[in-house]
Length: 247
Image 1 (tube, rainbow, N blue to C red):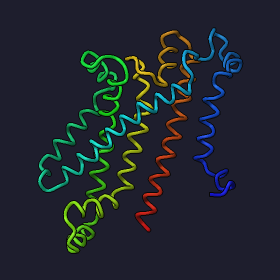
Image 2 (image 1 turned 120 degrees about the vertical axis):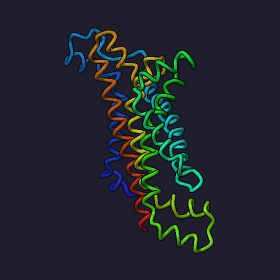
Image 3 (image 1 turned 60 degrees about the horizontal axis):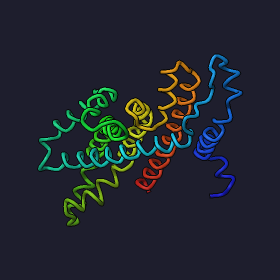
Image 4 (image 1 turned 180 degrees about the vertical axis):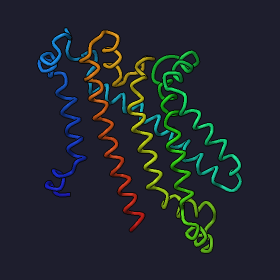
């Protein structure tokens, strides 16, 4: 890829904007102080925003990986002939997890597994399962029956038909569900700071507790830009999968 093409790539600009924002945030005190003079400490400095962002991404990555494995695996399982009767049950259970607020999940999980990252990952996983499961089901349902029949006519086994025909054709739509799940998790992970998980929610919670609006705004801006960046990155992956499918 040429330098000119890179310079025109919105994804590169988003990544650069995020890096610059995180790097310059500790030095933005005079600007924030001028905009919000009522705040004695204009910049959150208990931990660097770079460290918070890395911890935030770690929480989201673990939860998203679990949600992808469970969501896609469950969808594949209940679309097989031997388990189709359990499809409604699987959809109902996953939908139930989506309806429970993350804060409530944290409140239930903390007495059982303690404070920190683990209850946060549990909450994010439950919250991210629904889009992955539903889009995988929709993607597998939309696989042309003619393609499946052709694969069987060529002598492919059910497993080979799944891995060589169904999943490659369904990949773009599955990726769209993963993309939605990850973006939701990025925003939701901020509540993990309530139970001691290190995330970009730390400045937001600190700002709410101490009445410091600047902290809240700083945390929200970094989280929002991170979500936009990851959404654009996963959108690029989705585009590549769509192009390879149509090729």
